[in-house]
Image 1 (spheres, rainbow, N blue to C red):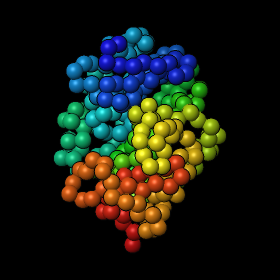
Image 2 (image 1 turned 90 degrees about the horizontal axis):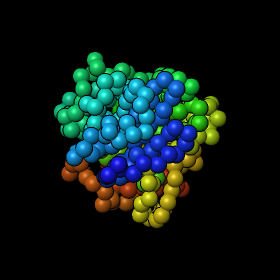
Image 3 (image 1 turned 45 degrees about the horizontal axis):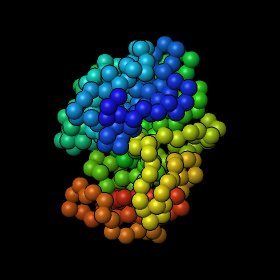
Image 4 (image 1 turned 90 degrees about the vertical axis):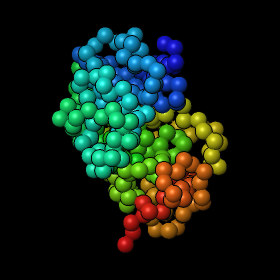
Length: 266
């Protein structure tokens, strides 16, 4: 599987890391197999890699409409994504999806508590708007594996400076809702982000910061602090998407890149 690193992370659950450090996942049930996100490999298709892992009928679940998570959408017939991504203006959405987006009528809408059955296990959805308005978290119910896309970062903080994202107030509400949803289900999930290595350099955590319920709790506090002006962080060197200054803020194990225009406090 040249160009891809495949790791079996659970029983019939695989993480595939592409050359650009994006992760996507394969969850095989008794009747179907789900691919969660697609990574972005411009020079090759991903179906041959997946077919080395499973021969079951495939469906694709997209955590959010960014190219490093849905670039290969055209390789799949059965596709699921939250239609709240349509809240982005069409031009921004087209740019962020690299022009790859299928017509919405060909994409199954998913919402909080949507269930996708694979036979012997299920995928349950929780909406987590912020990084994009239609971001979702995917819970595999048999082994309690949680696939978070970029909704809470991948151990290196969440990017809230990307065009099309929500206000920080909306993000805060979504994070609180996600925490409640997870706790109601026991809270003891194994977290897997959209960039699975979760190794990065930062002031707060120079080596390794795996995702967990604790990271989510710190992120809720961090967003609240930023909204209320208690922790505005410092100027950041993270990628800007406009002329507006990107800022970096951290609290505990949580980190966030954001722009001041995302704060809509009254």
